[in-house]
Image (cartoon, rainbow, N blue to C red; front, side):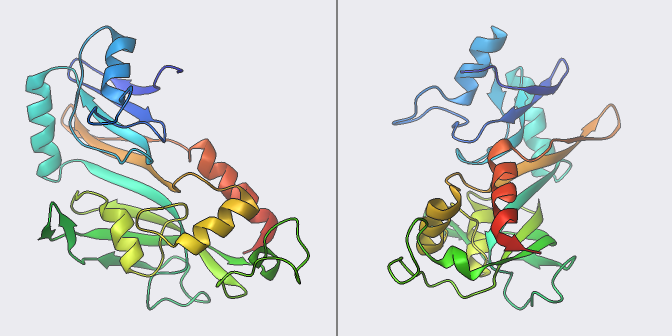
Length: 248
């Protein structure tokens, strides 16, 4: 595997760009987790201070020592670290209409369940782009319409690109909130829309979760420092593929 990209480093922490498909830490059935691979890459043990889902790519803070891990865990818990994401979703947040949703902001506050217990959660969103799915994509590729497999997707179904900021950091929070809000993330096989994911996979080859942590603001040397990365290749490719069959 290629080296994990390091965006920033100092004596306490590293900010890395975690690839999709790489678990942050080991566990039952997990091979070659990020912390193990990064330790091999650096020649020293590292300590993740927050999490990204295995299929979520993007910016992640990793500590060099246990003391630094404790400090940065507290900074994150106190809200001094701002984590921002982008997600490509099927549909729009409930209550929004395609003709007026662009640029709209809002807050999602439904509880999420963690280890069998309901936890308060808060996610802020902004609608960055809206697309409309053309009717031709409602049919299995390579077959005539009369023989193809029709899906439940309506013509001109909206696809939205959302910018998201976490108010809390619950497990799978963004994925659960967007599913509850009626706009599940594309290729989310756990919390998303199975029929939509199957058709998008067949027609456009979108197979990887369309969620990435693309912006991170940390308190460094007494002031906020912001790190930003472009969309990962699998999301950039998805947007390119969608642009061939979608109309803004």
